[in-house]
Length: 140
Image 1 (cartoon, one colour):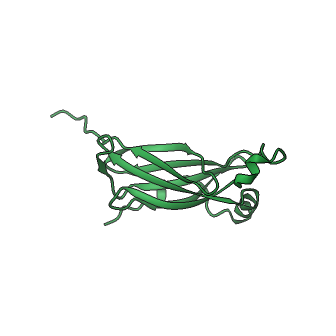
Image 2: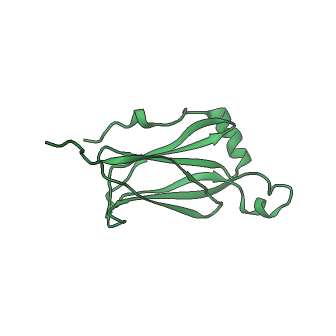
């Protein structure tokens, strides 16, 4: 049975008017692939809740969330970015990259929160994450 991760969604959602404005500011598209593993990337971890948030105009918004597959991967998360041509134009080069934060949760592992990620136009960004198992420190 899949865990209910609704309480792990880290930002407000939806934010339709702000999102439309954000997409107009960042018309490019890049993708994000999150790979989770344990034991120095030896074993993938399935059922890790992945939350992708955006910091925009001082507020945090959750824009994507999913659970990793049997390979420990959430694949093809398409996210707005600056157009690649905008980085080469002096008038638009000062526009900052969007600020994405990735958080990961699984009951058997220590959670990872707010891992910063940049996404670039027409580029797949791969975020490999090694999770640490939760240890039971009780003696008995």
